Amino acid sequence: MTDIARLINRAEQLLLRLEQLLPAPSPEPEWGESIAFRWRKRNGSGLLEPVGQPHRIRLRDLQGVDGQKKIIDRNTRQFVAGQPANNVLLTGARGTGKSSLVKAMLDKYAAKGLRLIEVEKHDLIDLPDIVDRLHGRPERFILFCDDLSFESGEPGYKALKAALDGSVAAPPENVLIYATSNRRHLMPEYLEENLGAQHVGTEVHEAEAVEEKISLSERFGIWLSFYPFDQDAYLDIVEGWLSALGAPVPDAETMRRAALQWALGRGSRSGRTAWQFARDWAGKARMKTEG
Image (cartoon, rainbow, N blue to C red; front, side):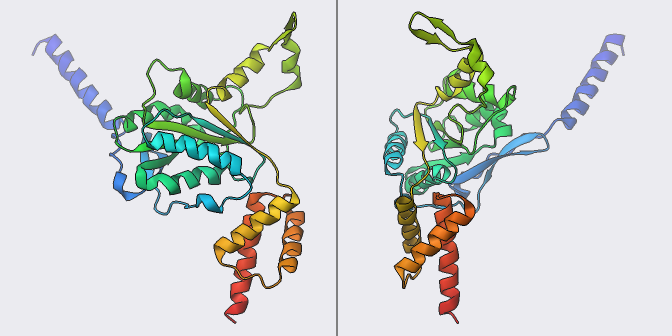
């Protein structure tokens, strides 16, 4: 055997060993197993994992956010129908129904082919791989990024920007991104960043740091803002959840006082607080009925 042949043989053996060390390609997900999926990493390889019991929330059970419901429902209905639609950013006070509204879209439109894929913030760098797997599928996919916020320099920030509107590859028409956040611009803002703003005539030109932070949220076509509920709205939400749970309310005034005391103890009149109170009230009422 010549020196060149031996060298080629050794190179082939080395490549074979390297291939054995590489992670195996992840299997195609079982699309029929669920309407919701999670992106997970196993042994360095990503896969779409079906969610066995998706959290089903009916749109009509969400109270106090009628304006937001109307807009996101219209956008999602367009998307499922194969018409142009926008990525959506839901921002505002905690516990006001941002995530629940996205889950309600899945509940309403799953029978028409809508699917939800939850992507954690640290996995956003895998967005190109996720989108490639969805390309050409007959279903319509919402990539759901919950409670999203970034610190400076995080790699997922630029990956999300590119996926929204900044990559050389056109986004597939069967994929949208719905994200929730407590921050309007998804990144912390500092007072000193505004010191770089320039005044040209009557116009204000933002500093580069501010422009960078605004640029991500601007890539979402629809912004939905959520605000804390007042006392009346909070009590309406409580009553709505009690009705949905089939909980008896023999004395409405006693229930309302208990609901306000519950909110006071948590320092929040939010939809989440109302839901938690309703579950507590319903559970105690059923235990009492059953003896």
